[in-house]
Image 1 (cartoon, rainbow, N blue to C red):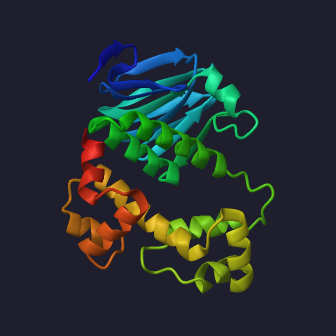
Image 2 (cartoon, one colour; image 1 turned 90 degrees about the vertical axis):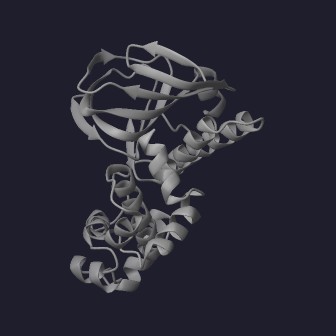
Length: 268
């Protein structure tokens, strides 16, 4: 295991492979990291704790399972919360960025994804870093490329090319208590026919309303696992699953990891 002490915290498990630099970083509690830039484009997955990041005149708090992507040279500052923070950090060399230019530009501009498919791929990268074997370099390269694919396929949405009601439909899905969702509910609330909602939603989001809701249920459970020491059975009920085994199957299907592994990754 490699350790290095830098201005932003303690770096663990640093690996360099084919245009990627991959590491875990532990940030000390209540530390302010003044405005700075990185030579390479960066992708950060928050694992535990929180920090507030300021860039381009905005300020936003990041909690567990948030993925933050920034291009090289993006000036930003960080204020770490009272509990510190632990992150997965992936840097892309300029050569790797140029290599991908004709295919995708996952770090062309700053953007944030919360509890996304990219978050789950990042968790698999952390597990690989912590349990290395002879195939780890190959596994890390494949997972890092998969992460770029997910960031490129699911860029931040501006709703500019979507019907004006789509943003409200997504908000309703996130606000609806687990298990209470019916397709007619958001359709009625935003004033569109449920068949029109279903068709438009699939075109815009790349999945059905039901698939989105199931993914959201897993994401809620994963967030609770990283933030709370509550028993798994209580997390399962709070996230709207029938029981702990139902939650365990859903999480493993989405992430390839058990609920206990998710919690262990976040706790460091």
